[in-house]
Amino acid sequence: MIRRTFALVAVVALAVWAMPALAEDPKPGTHEGKVVKVQAGKLTMTDKDGKNEHSHIVPATAKITLDGKAAKLTDLKPGQPVKVKIEKKEDKLVVVSIDAKKAD
Image (cartoon, rainbow, N blue to C red; front, side):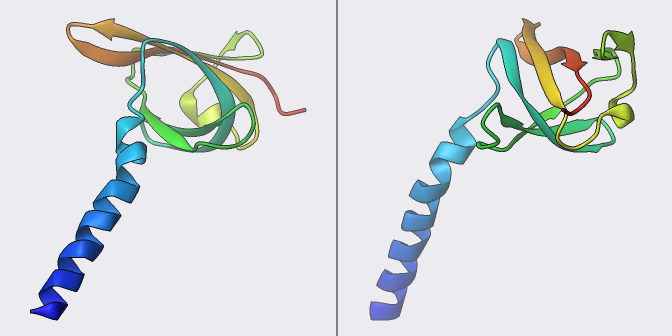
């Protein structure tokens, strides 16, 4: 009985601890930060201070630029500053553009 109670408390504590990470869904607007990594159709980035790592699904329709020139998602490298623009389309939040600069 004590083991079950302890296990239940541990599960609840883990769920409460993880809640803020789950609640950080993207919001419409522009998000600025730095590239952490790029995978097929996915950008992982931090905020401008290099904290709060999060990911965005990047559709093929997103406009991607690097120093003002057309680029592919795979052209983005870790450490590069990025601005990600998200808009609400048909009740979904969608990345519409990514503007990246070469790392300083």
